[in-house]
Length: 192
Image 1 (cartoon, rainbow, N blue to C red):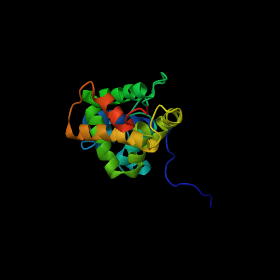
Image 2 (image 1 turned 90 degrees about the horizontal axis):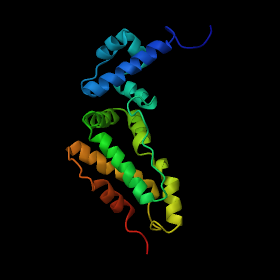
Image 3 (image 1 turned 180 degrees about the vertical axis):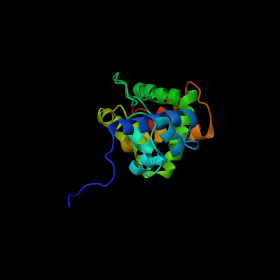
Image 4 (image 1 turned 60 degrees about the horizontal axis):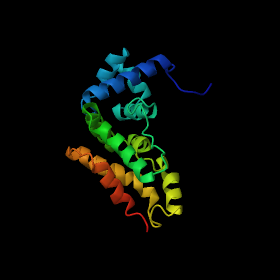
């Protein structure tokens, strides 16, 4: 008896339609109002097809994150040679997305999905707060004496995103100086 999975072969067109439907409904309604029935109807497939391939909506969200469908562009840290200015610009970009009408609900919904599904949490971290985003740059700046020698580089991205997450959950709007102040708090004073 040959090995392999049982059931109908997974159609790439149906998979893409389901992920597209999930991403658009998630953006429109948020995680709490997302349903497998609604996703199946929007994708033009039966809900059994969705359940055959994904155990639930959080797994669908995880795949949408992996495919880049929920956060369409990864937040790239600019490289002007000034690490503080670059981190401030990056944080400002993230703040503007999170505080936009669509981004605010999306971000809070992603947090809700991440609390339900470990894979969503991991993928959200990779999209927004992956230490690799600027670890090399911070390490080089520390070695050049631009940043303090005891700066815990691996914690910088999580600390920056943590400040944003708390504000998003509390619905506290940030003022234009917020990103710079947070970067200064995290990086500390420049060595003399």
